[in-house]
Image (cartoon, rainbow, N blue to C red; front, top):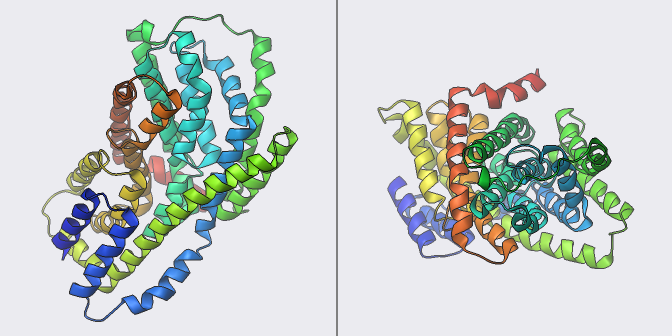
Length: 429
């Protein structure tokens, strides 16, 4: 049964079918050939329950919040404030990109939104600053990936729903690794710019202390949103969905205070949010249907039994999983990759003794790598689209050093799992 599932899954994906249709077809095959009793008649109730999941309501709210921040000018103010403080470091604006991406990630929950927003603000300064295009564009693409690791994260919500892991604890688990990964990105940039100073752009005038302090108010809106949303979750005041609603209301108020809240802006934000949410929900429901049938036909137990029969240390199996995702990430869109494989991989992880909460953080990093590995890396296309000129090769080649850093981060988390599990344990205690 397992070889049949994997073979059919990847043949259909290779044919270019929409991932939701692929998941439904695989579900029908499993039900027809391997089920001892028909399970699809019960799927209506299951799909209704999945579509009314309170946790998934956070998805459109986070998308909408990101749209408001992008169109209100809040993101540009944040970028300029960070730039005044870090541009003096070798690499200049590149460190601003990583810092701004990390902070914007803490409010938007979306990797693509983070890359598009920071790219829109930063790319016009690439030529004037004399930066190396591959390193500059690669830092935007890689910085954008922090949107799915630093909470709040839409992808963590989906993983939590599919793997039956607490979303609030996932947010806690991802915070420290997300900040460490952002720091590693900056260390990489610093090392490259010290080795090859020309890649870090021209040395510019050092901002005065007055200019730095005058720019600080630009950090207040995103910091307030982060404290409101993530802080309310950590303190137990709100669920992730309620925190997303609070963030949207606050972003709406901030947009109004800046005089940017217009009917046209709202309609644009609502339309883009609706399109993205419909795509996500269709895939999520199809994946939940597949999960339902997999459990009904006993496939999850078969996967655990098959893995248990493998005479190899858990770390070897984990390494094989990382390599598989590194390869699949080159050919599959990230949301499709995540939803199609979660029902298969999570039983394997639990069977070899790893914590699915800890693996959720590893999983986000693996999905991050898929976002910046050609030819399907979504963030690469987003950055190139914002750039609007030049070769796609610049973006792809500039992202590769950051993929290596992500692999290093996976190794660090494997060696020191407490980096992800300490905060959820501490807050629970």
